[in-house]
Image 1: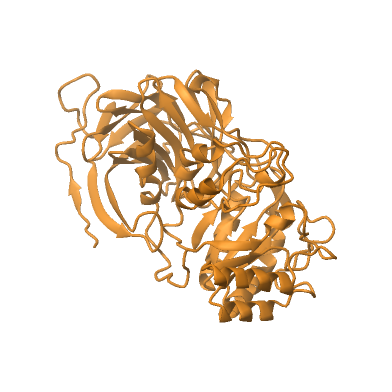
Image 2 (image 1 turned 45 degrees about the vertical axis):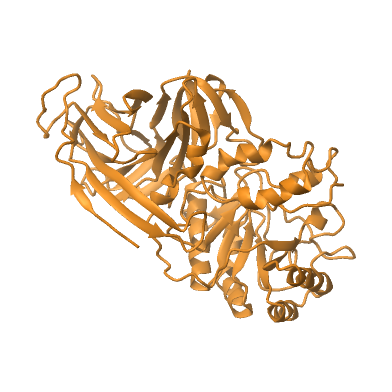
Length: 548
């Protein structure tokens, strides 16, 4: 079912801006390339100060007006002016690949790739390439730092990457840099009224054109937010690191893709596979040990304050309660049962601490061997749970034995958690000691990959809560199955306010463009601790299984 082809596009010449002739390819001042169907076009150029710039057009109409590219470095002069541009010929790539699970079994990956080099004409004579992948429904571009004498260790303070939207309109966005990470309701405002926003941020221009800005394939790099600098101009805002640099990497390396999904309709954004396509192919091979499923869990009763995570008379994760849920799942054809609070460490102050958690020792009233054996006898899987309290440092010390235990017990998926306020995650610092970090810092990107790789070694799939944002890595690592990363159903248990009726439709055109969300639908009891109860219907709860 796969087909691949690489074709040089001889007709995609390097054009002088405003001219009809072909400028010499060695030193153009302005170049352009288009998507396979000619729908999208990117122009790359430098301004009068040698600043690298790009612009995006759709069927001849400006979508992203001239926008800056470049970097501010913490130990070297900025890489952002005095640059000359050279551009190669675009190359076409076309394949159809198969998802082991997901929204579509077969996905076509058809794009034109175009490499543009920006090199300093004096001074250190450093170089950075910008690689564009142009699809008819969007594009991605990333920076690639080659091996070069004057830039071995790259310490990035911030990116100068801009998205200068060509028209005002309406934006659907949620705020960045707040204490509760991603868990905020979406605002619908004029584009020119956005402050600092998380991605994906989706806009509808006055012309009706829909654009969503996000990123893809974020590995060993800081997460990106968007800061509006003026009118409809946005600039990438990297999550802070452990030093004055947001990112520290050794060249050669590449950044994540900065992405634009573009469509005449909101539905077209959903139908796009851009984020997945910009990730590398499956590195794990056969992952048939994981099966997508609906699950029930020992968790909602905790949010209703009927049970507790910690030990004591109201402890929810008991052998008896888990077996009751397993029997219910077996009777109704549900695949798994999630049991939260089974392991030692929930007593005392675990929020934003997590140093007391054991990921291999159960509370005395939870017989994990017996529970797993009962689940197997009923054709149901136990779903593991590893809450860390945001303490990635502590979790990594037990990661290997914790995953090995699940493999031995036949537990093939685990919900991880990082409950801590913003900048409250705990990671290993440069000296090996524990330091605080943002949830979407480079250090946490590294941590989440360690968890994914450990899970893969032991045939365990990862469903992260309070996570690093989704950037499509599930294509490369199909054991990344879902994650939280927005206001989930639990807010309807105790939130003040709970999730309003428009929250889930808003998610479809924002957060869910990044990938699947563990929203935990399927709530049929309408009385909750939230003053308004669950603002839903039974029909909507069933529909969420399809939509989310």
